[in-house]
Image (cartoon, rainbow, N blue to C red; front, side, top):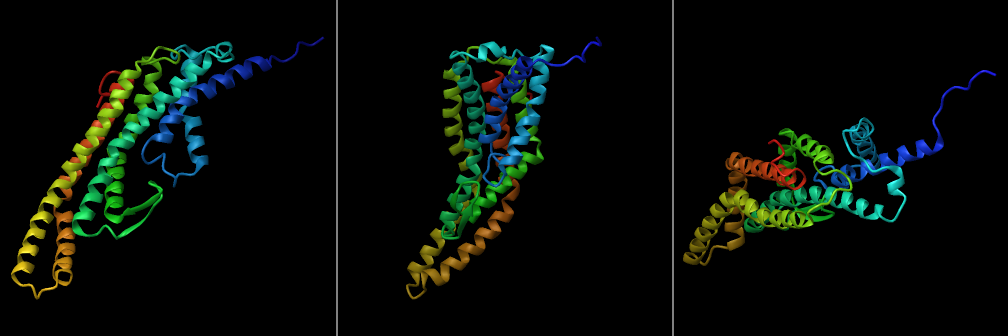
Length: 272
């Protein structure tokens, strides 16, 4: 009798699929919570395919022995719930840290719009899921373009993929450091947002004081017909003039975001 062709056992295939699904948890959670890719404007099919492809190096490293993936038998018990929770938490917090810091751009745009009287110029933002000022959306797009232009997305993905070796699945995780990283990101968001909006807001504040003095000196002048056009024109000019300073401030947001993710997952600045 001729020997049968070699094949794979069903149990082995099921175990590999379980490990592959496990390898997608951390990187998938990060992509869902990260800025840009986690927006509602990205189709679900694109997200799913990206997660499947990005998990290939992790699975290949697990097969080659470079990444210590749990055995299929270890994922069949209740003890696997703790490992699953840890993997999802690491990915979500890493993505949320970037999202929180990137909120500095929207915060700066929102405050500039409120100071310039452009808060009513709002439209639906698919990324935020609600009405936001146009200036805030422009700052958000500017932030995203800087992030992509500086290859920040590649650096962040590299840090998450390398974290499978520095923080192997199932290894104990210091949740205190994770919480501290999230709280620090929240405080830094306000500081970085203030640095981005301060040049324009300071000039607009001086302009509003000057308009108030003029209208006080000449009560016959209508505040809205006199001050509002000047404020709008000055805002557009200031946004153009301060664009290099704003870009430098938002680039600091990218740098701090990558560094925060690296410190949380690797204990360093992510090589940036």
